[in-house]
Length: 555
Ligand code: HEM
Image 1 (cartoon, protein in one colour):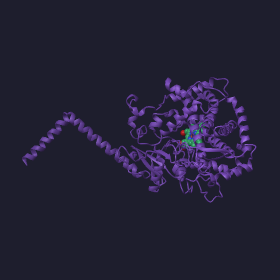
Image 2 (cartoon, protein in one colour; image 1 turned 180 degrees about the vertical axis):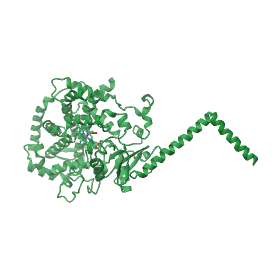
Image 3 (tube, protein in one colour; image 1 turned 90 degrees about the vertical axis):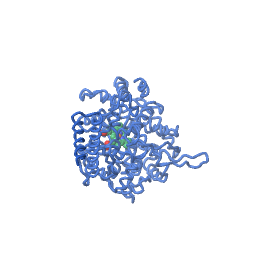
């Protein structure tokens, strides 16, 4: 007894001594205790959200579910998780950040379209946002007055009314695609890239891109494809910074995982600003979007990096997406040749061999329209719907909480791959879009696809992309029998409909194919129209002295 009371008195005196005169060990001990308490409180909060938010795998403290991510194409994994939980949306924790993945068309329509006023913002994005363009670019901007200004200014360039005025040169550029494919069919992918880059370059800078070797194509596409990898959740650097945002705060000199990320003052931005100034100051260059932006700049107090973002977005958002969609179209023709005769029958009946289809034919070409819709659906380029949305207030869906600021991503892969809306979804089957077809199913929007996003953040260039994709697909279907290439043994070389890149904007891995003109008359028409189009487009010929690569060396 006496010994017990003596030892407890001694221990008490030690505690008192430690409190009045703490040593290093005591401080370390106190910090450890504090750390454990903070961690426990943080994890308790994570578990609370785990039970209130849409279902998903149990998160671990700090790392969440990041370790469960596959090395590639996480959208397929999220589709499987949603099937496993039998829910239209799931929660997946990227570190301590719960992200919601919408895997069903009706839920996407309800949340992102019908409740557009609640979901118009972007969440905090460490890699694509804070280490990328941040709040200078419409794509990653939070919802608010500045976003409204940028959206309005973007519409001056590619708003629905405006893009109708671009039809003549877009049509001419598309005629050149068909002509160039006759000359060098093996370069078809390059012809699509040139076409897409040239259309946005004429709109933006009043200058066309006439050569597939123009460095602006290869350089800008390379940057875009790299950027597209930067918003696909991943468990390696640089995306691991979304799991551990503190790593983004380290100075670049001691943080190799940050290398190559642009930042607000990125050299890519300055490159676009120089292109814009060059176009503004060239009296010979026709009226263009940059000239209008410079006129508007004082009214909105636009900074140079904002001007660079607004004009650069035309390339950034509009060239890789449009050309990848056309490569997907070619892959579909090779893999599903049985869908072609019906397209030819319609085109021969409505258009004939002496001219190629025009935009005015659209109403008379229901199967071609369905074909284009199926291209947009079957392998949608923006496979996770571009950037995530974020609610500007807490929301509830089917009893689940979606807190303000949550990263909410439309999983377009899962949405367009659902048996319920698209029976046999990996089959390319345009007729599913025709009302009378037995495979036709209800869909929450009239178009029948969600390729261009939702609500207030829906793609600003949708009108331009849809009209360009229609006219180019219609023309190529009319002109060619597009089919699998043959090997030296004369046998067809198979194509793989799942071989796609891993970016946020995906495109088929390279494959070979043949473009066979459908008749001598059609071939003659393609050549004649191609030469005439080139003549008309010559008003946009011009050079730029800037190269993105020089910029990177210079800075
Ligand atoms: C096939 C071609 C294209 C596809 C599939 C596509 C798809 C998308 C998607 C999915 C989004 C995100 C929408 C959302 O957050 O809900 C987006 C945003 C955007 N797109 Fe496109 N796009 C295409 C072409 C274009 C073109 C040609 C331009 C302009 C020339 C453009 C400009 C933009 C801009 C500026 C945004 C950001 C809008 C905002 O955050 O408010 N896109 N696009």
